[in-house]
Length: 161
View 1: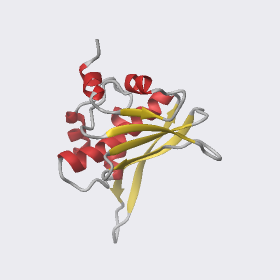
View 2 (view 1 turned 90 degrees about the vertical axis):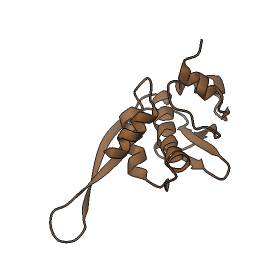
View 3 (view 1 turned 180 degrees about the vertical axis):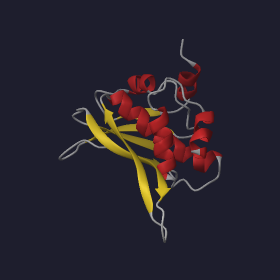
């Protein structure tokens, strides 16, 4: 029997152009994450030249979330900015708050990217806000991609920082 989150995600159309990640496997890897109602999820390979990196986007006109998984997949690191702190002194200058993350599995990459893009969806479709809040989306994904179950309450908490 599928979990509640998997049943919710079952309503979302999932497609994949990656031979190693067929749609049923993608559903299993994203099990426990909130659903972006009315949007399809598409997984594509990311063919990189020098090193793997994170790449995903939400197309609000087409109502799709596209996640790109590095191919071939090798563990890789990424510096993720999750906030900014104002520097003391004259004028407006900030210090980026970052965290280094090592992605060891395709599951970690898919979950991080999906949560990041889901937060863009949540800001626009549920809250009616502009969806270009990159640090908020990164903060939400960073805090939750390793968790088994993620809810809308977690999104609200990420908005508070």
